[in-house]
Image (cartoon, rainbow, N blue to C red; front, side, top):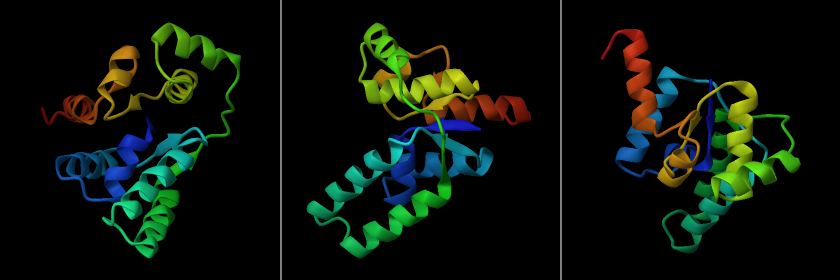
Length: 142
């Protein structure tokens, strides 16, 4: 299981070259993805941007969102004051702190394409490349 932020989910929905390839491989190796409820708004926002710049039509964006709902499991995790402390100490957004708090509380790694987020939470956050490398080592592939 991983905590997947929107930067990992969106490439599964909209072709983004290497990011999509990495996300697909990650999904094959670790099919259980969870996220705090705010992931939905972040993915919807990204899809709306693709529609506005005419890279997706509205119907394709709606289909992509429906697919996202099949990929990510909503955590019942609710934000509280602890996220404020995490965000302040890590110098990140409260949104990012929600993903980090979920990872801390579940013991699952947080996977993100946001290198600043990964660096802020280096103890348990990884890029897709790092996560794939770690799973390859455990499987004996690397």
